[in-house]
Image (cartoon, rainbow, N blue to C red; front, side):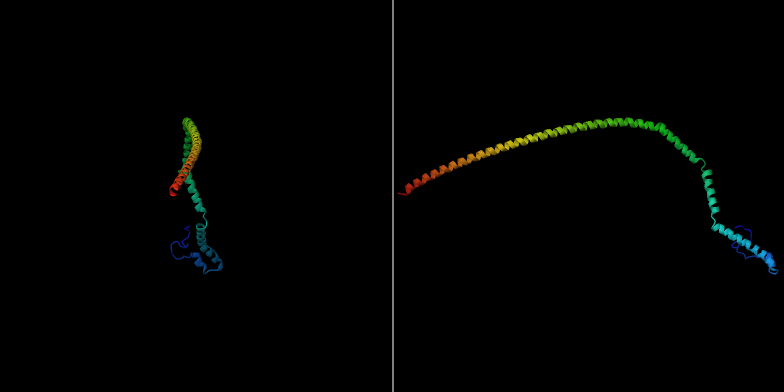
Length: 196
């Protein structure tokens, strides 16, 4: 606090000392008491003002922090940001002037080569697809021809089977006729022998 009076509370733990003018005023008249009371209250008012300013008035603390920040930013850092920005500008300039054209040229050369390879691969794949398409077409034509041939062979086979069945049926019918005739003759001969 200010240290202006030894009577301020909380300073040294000593008892409150009364000034000499107050002790004289106790015996005197009223006019003398007013200045003595005001001198007694002045240190208390001053201490209360200091307590108020320390507890509730933050302007000195904020001003101190601002001064510290300005000191840190301006004095200690110096031109570091400026140097960093200059280095960045230099790096960007070098990149734009030297590295970027080299990268573009390298990319152009490599991409044109890659494009040519891709074009060649695309042409090869297209040829392979055409060959495969032709082979599938030829295979489909062979399958269709084979299917038609099988249909013709089946029809021929069915006709032959029908003809053979008819021949077999005819032979069977003729054989049955012969057997009937033979059995009828045998019955006639048997009937001759039975009648004796």
